[in-house]
Image (cartoon, rainbow, N blue to C red):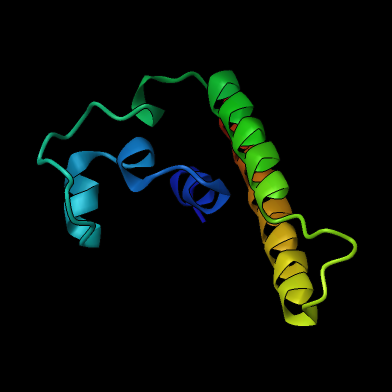
Length: 102
């Protein structure tokens, strides 16, 4: 997964993470044809990592079930989503570290 895909997994919108031409290629409605202008394109590697951490925290709060929640399927869904968010954040960290060396 690319950094863009990980940011979307963590909760960013496609318009924030991808350029307009890439949104059109992916078939996302409502994206312009502009090749630049996303938040992602204007950020440094440290800012991207910080943004990913903020998105992670917001998503964990969103998908954290109450301990007294009665629906076991919802708990299972939240556990799976939390694992996906952890993987996405770790992937962003590793890609940012890898790109620093280049």
